Image 1 (cartoon, one colour):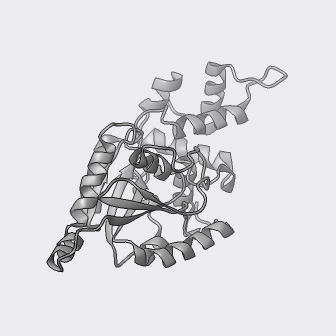
Image 2 (cartoon, helix red, strand yellow; image 1 turned 90 degrees about the vertical axis):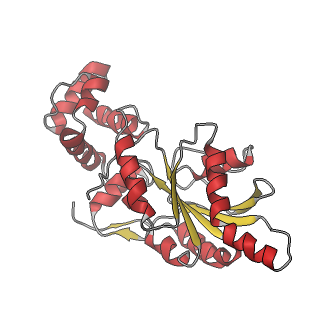
Image 3 (tube, one colour; image 1 turned 45 degrees about the horizontal axis):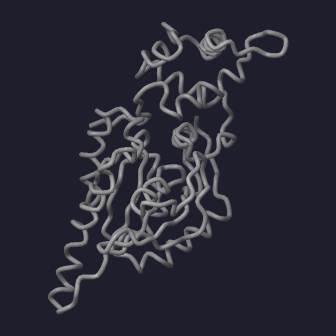
Length: 283
């Protein structure tokens, strides 16, 4: 997995320019990382554009990730950013946790306003991140309405919009943005597996091989629990067993390995193989 993957649709270039233009309007930048692949979620282009702002990192999809790894990444990322929190967007307290973190990072701004005899103004925040990392779901929770479109595929959110969450802070939504390219296929594979880039950027057989090798080394019980596969052998052997267990056959009655592979990848992305983190923290 060594070749460079290029992936930069025109609308993402436009979105980068919009972030550059709008970042001067905000006090705090909220960047979302998928807890299953925190390093692959980092977009250096966005990092450069928002370098001079207070940065709140939110680890999302924690219900799909390995809790031990999420904890370790939280500690590690806290050394690099102003504040890091982990959020399960399905839990009722998600907006309370986020609001508290935003207010903490906005204390300095409010103190300056009070010192000038001003009434503290709402903290203006910008939500950024790669596609399909949970931005729209989070915005909808905070705004308590369908403020942003939600679909389980990359690049669905379009345009930008300010959203008033409460009297304390405002949100500026931006489209999901990916780096122009990846120096190796590993990050691209991670992003394809978690649904941040289109599956057709990398062939299913490459993703399937990569995923099965990773599961064999780190989560061998995942395929046993889901498909009753006791030992993870080579890719074709595993796909054959999945096809047999799920009765996935072609029109001629043979095992349909292509559909079995698509099912494997989909069930991983949907969290049905268990709580799995693709990037392990190594101290």
